[in-house]
Length: 203
Length: 244
Ligand SMILES: [Fe+2]
Ligand SMILES: [Fe+2]
Image (cartoon, rainbow over all chains, first blue to last red; front, side, top):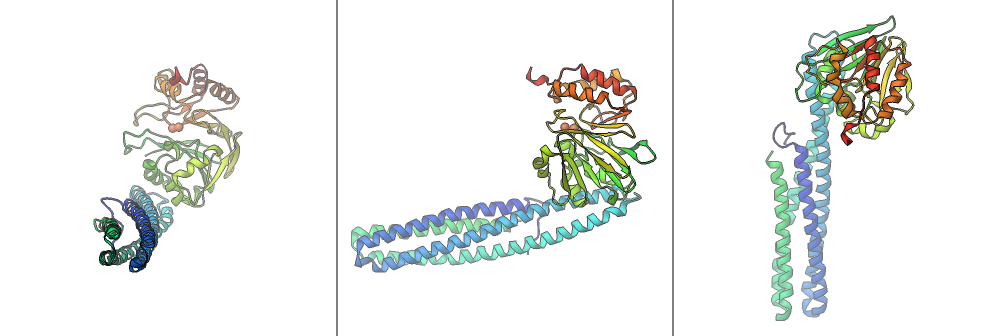
């Protein structure tokens, strides 16, 4: 379990960067959706020879839907994490100044009267840190899940290429295009997800 | 940080805090003032984030924090109140008196616990322990929503940026020779203060008050006849020079 970094890039920046990566992922999902509906339209034109292909477009659509939901969820977690990390950083700053004041006021008559505020802030800091770590590990699990599920994109693309061999030459290009598109976009999403995972690992 | 008792009456006292020797040279030096009466106190223009730790350390030499009940911000500047987010975690039950005009702005400094008591343009009054103090309008001097604090019992005016001087942090806290002090105030007032009309209005109202100490947020404190000297000098000064 990672804890909030004391040095280097602050965690609220990392979380915001992860959120940005996932926003790009959402744009990729829209592309897959579009590809799936284009393929569906094409398969209607091709007719009965494309029945297998038509079923396939349904799966492509489903994959895009799943990826979109997962990216949205992780995106929300990233936003929560960024907010929590910002609050944690602010609380850490307050603690830093409190400790400085405590050092300076070592022999002050009413130094004890700071202790309540210091204690509350320390408690608050511990709570924020644990909330943050919970959101963080949830986010990491979901990122890995998403990456795992994206593997089915390659399988779908392969089946798509097999189906292409079963139709007339003039339609083959459409099938191959869809297969390529699914491959490319899935690779893009995987890239984004890997970047997001790396952002955390680099801490 | 230098701490000094300014005035003491049977009901209350005024304390000065400032000239922190550990302050970063690049930030403007500020004066903080405290009125303490019984179990209540008012800290005026608490200062910036950088000043928070020395300020807190100095305060607990004078009073337990639960006696620090009120904060006052003359206006929204960072040197006045950017420490608010830290005070908010220190004094969750405190009240902040500040111009209504700046509430939405000052809250950007972070305020979840302290309550904001918006001062209407015409000003107001507040009982601090046994003493009643007045929030005197000083709009456009320099901020468009701005107040000073007048204590008619101790005859002290906390005048915010009015009367400010730019000088090294080692400087004495009291004006010694008024005419030689002018050089350290002139540019500040001509450049920071925007309105001759606002200035004339403020000067005429201040002439009606009995002021023995005029305490600005930067520079030195004016005493006795120096207050009248300041009002005369400021009255004749042409301000708002940047548009010339
Ligand atoms: Fe100011
Ligand atoms: Fe100021």
